[in-house]
Length: 275
Image (cartoon, rainbow, N blue to C red; front, top):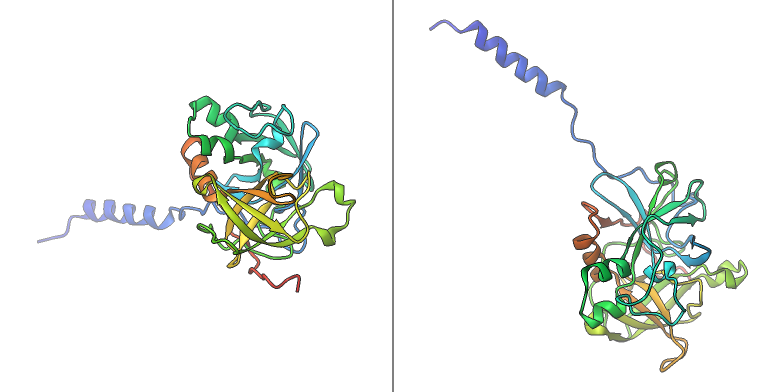
């Protein structure tokens, strides 16, 4: 049977179109080198003048880059307001100054505001869900590296921590007067609280005001938490660290940001960096 030239022509056109169609581009941004990136976990953020320390880097399905901070960093009440379901906060859309950024960022998610809008009633969630996201301008996103200073990582998201488990963090409060040797911290988990929503930790140099929001990673280098509180009692000098796995899951379900995820560091984790 003779071949059908029209069919051959149409098929050839389809194959040609398939060959010419570009592959779907990855939404993963091209990160700046860790050694020179001006924006990274641990840089300071200023929300209406309130200073905090950023934690992890996040992206979404479109490749938009976000920097994490504690939700209470945009709080408008007193320093003792810790219940996110009743504490007031600046609204989303509030500009945030980010150290190392030319254009700064915008507060686009705040767990406190989200819980209040949803009428969250679980007391543990209300007490310990303390995460906010700052959307960076595309021009500043090109200056970001997701690695934790000094230690490297994170290597993923960690699970529950046993009492005595090692933790690592990097705080950047202005109250240290620029003494960067005091920024990286090693410590131990003392106990868990809130049915797994938080950990109480001790570090060799305790977190201080301005360290709020700092990233915490575990012994294998996985992300485990966000510094939320500096305790005076009953465990003086301890820090409350909200569980990032739960906080991120809450954000993924309720932020309206498609494909939200925490980004692993480009540098390998080194828990012996301070030894």
